[in-house]
Every structure is written in structure tokens, then in C-alpha cells.
Image 1 (spheres, rainbow, N blue to C red):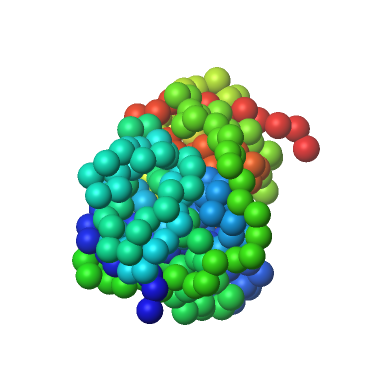
Image 2: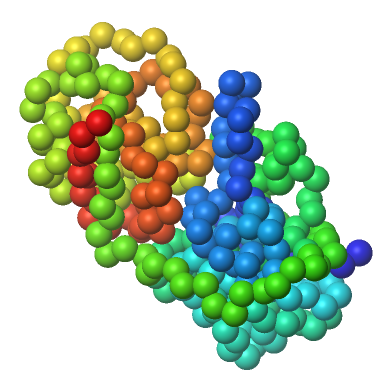
Length: 285
């Protein structure tokens, strides 16, 4: 079998594609790469279709040994990439001979790196996706030492030489469409959200980007029945600090939603570290 053998799994490295779409009514989160443009770019660099499964690393990188010759590319949060100890290109295709060790180091900026391999990772799909879903436990578990990741045959398609990507933001700006529960908040809540500066909270993960900053005042103190939640929903728990739902978010929730962040703004959210300033920009319908 040709593949990638895990030498060092890093703090949290998972297999991700573009996620399980259209199954939220079954209570299944979408999952998938948090920074979709970065995964798509890595796949283009090795000639894969955009949604081919690759690896998503978190802060600390990953180390892999090639079983059979492989062609890989790394994108997302910038990091040092080494092949048998020698520096190689980040953001470009790299040929990895059989038995060689590829090391993706800690991210120097941003949070999440993406590694694509020509042919893609062919772990068994679940409900049409090979993504790891850390909330419900669907899909492959996070990488462990000694695990062999199977790789499929290369696709017969052209490769991109270069795919420009934005740098991780120094300040995260999130547009905010009005949510369905504005009447659950005091009149001052939305203006307060718009003029305040929040910080990315350390408890942020693949489920939600949590924030620290001024609590948003509520107009109602009773409980909201659980209802369906969408990607980008900004739920406000009892502590009043808004949190933005990311790819592994639950499909239902019982806290009021003050707004929804457009999907186009979420890749940047995936690359912001704790302490990064966050600014919400309310939109009109």
C-alpha cells in the first residue's frame, strides 16, 4: 500500500475534506476543513480535485514518512517545511521519495496548516465525507504515531504552480447579518457589539470561535427552545460573550443568535490565534 506513515502527529492533526453537506437534518455536523481556500489551494498544487481529503494541522505541525513516492503541498498557516532535514518550499508541490521524512513545523503565523498529497487520502468515507468530526466522533480519529494513511492513485489533471492566499489576519473583521433572535437582546446590545473590540478566546476550537469582551445585555431571561443552527451563527451564551459557530458546530442550540457571519469570512476566523482582536460589522438585511 502506498501512503503516509505518521511519525509525529502534532497537537491535533485530522483528515479533512469539504465536509458532510446536506445531513444536518440527521443531527450530523458538517465538519470539513476550517480554512477551505487553503485546502483547495493545496489540492490544486498537486493536481487533485478541490474536495480531495488532506490533513489539517493545528499550531504544531506534523511529521510523516512516505511509503512509496509521493507529491505533496502545504498551505494554510505559514510554517517551515523540511524533507529529510532540508528546507523545502511551503505553498508549492514537493516530491517526496519513498522512505523520506517530511516535517511540517509549528505555524509561524495563523493556526492551521493543510497538507495535500497527489491522489488524496483514501480513509473510508462516512456519509459521503472522509472528514474527522470531533463533536460527534464521525470519520477518522485524530492522527496517532505509527498510523498509515492510505493514498490513492494520482489524478490525471493539471497542477497549479502557484495559488495566492491571504496572510492570517492581524485583526479579525467579521461581517454580521441580523440573527433571528434580536428581540431577545436589549436595544443597546447590537450597537455595543458593533463598537466594542473583542479578543479571540483561548477556548476556541473547531466547534466555535469564542470571544472575550463586553457581555451583551439580554432583554429576556427565559430559556429558548433548541432549534437548528447554521454555520457562522453567532450564539450568545449566559456569560454574554458571542461565539461564532465553525465547521464542527452542533446542529441545534438553545441560546439566542444575534447574527450570522457569512461563510466567506470564516476561513480567516480559522487562522486567528487567542488574543487576536475581533471586530463585528453589522450588516442590514
